[in-house]
Image 1 (cartoon, helix red, strand yellow):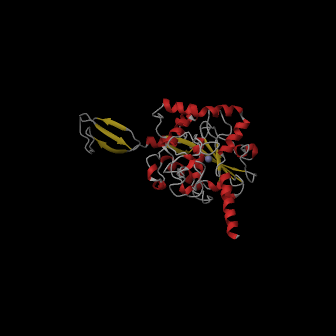
Image 2 (tube, rainbow, N blue to C red):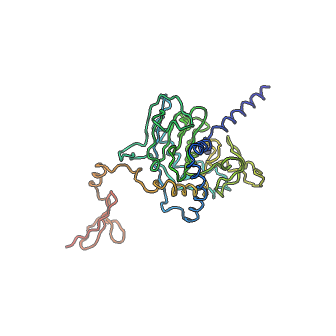
Image 3 (cartoon, rainbow, N blue to C red):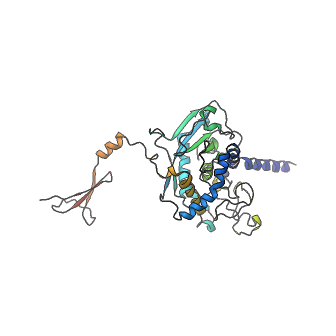
Amino acid sequence: MKSIFTLLLVSLCLLSNAQNRCGTEAHTLELIEKYPAYTIARSKVNAQTNKWIENYPSHSEKIIITIPVVVHVVWNTNSENISDAQIFSQIEVLNNDFRRTNIDIINTPTVWQGTAADCEIEFCLAQTDQNGIATTGINRVQTTQTSFGMSGDPVMSVASGGADPWSQDDYLNIWVCDLGSSLLGYASPPSNWTNPADGVVIGYKYFGNTGTAQPPYHKGRTATHEIGHWLNLEHLWGAWGSCGNDQVSDTPKQEIENYSCPSFPLHPDACSTTNANGDMFMNYMDYTNDACMNLFTTGQKTRMISAINQYRSNLLDHTLCEGVVSAITESINQRKELVKIIDVLGKTTSERTANTPLFYIYNNGTVEKQIIIE
Ligand SMILES: [Zn+2]
């Protein structure tokens, strides 16, 4: 009897995970019901994306795309007011996951090592705010709200106890708060429609890999997954059902989400096909534990790059990660110091030979050609 009860409890826990790992599909449905314009715009996204990929086989003129992030920490209790270190840890996880420099890439099964991609997308905490003023990219807001639900996006507005977004064309807005229930996070997929609820929301227990982050979702992969949605990725089993189409050709067809930390190969006979490799359960767009995720594929990369170029193009060309040009920067430029002198053959020299061109290299990156004429 006890074992049956335990089994039931485990099943209920799994069920509760099934409902709450990611709220993006439910959130998208809510937006579709609320805004007819969003329905129309979203219905065009897949065709637009396929066309863009066809027209731009080399994908993007900008090779490394850096996305400026503002993190709105909306807190009621002290523990919800997560530390700067926890926020930095999340940015580091994002950079490692999207550049495939995460240490757990060795856990990608051999058959998919060649499919896994360096997405060439990076993230920075914004150094300049929307008024051109220097910022840390962290916006802390104390609230009287003890928790926020997903419906109506209350955390995205000061009027409902949250924080207003910064320009959604220019920044990735991430809200970190108590999401209530056990919802980990949700995001808004892109389209040509201007979405007042654009951004990503993550529960404060699932953000970064230190501080309040709780196992098994304590390695920052909730944000990696939700930003995948924000850049137009679907779950591996497709939208709205099982064995669906995730619009990416190099992820195997998958029946439904996976939890916990399975062993490879998993479900090799799913979706009425025989696929010896089975589900790509370690993909960031599945529901497995943070510690068991480790890749995006080349097809997913292409779809994300396409989304940025089509719907989030301000992210291609900005200076929001570089900070405000200040008097300090100017004075550093004025204090330039000679690093070395090289001759026309590129050899370092200390002799300032007369009537011979020499190149003076300075610590600020400038080079001067000088000839001492005698
Ligand atoms: Zn999701």
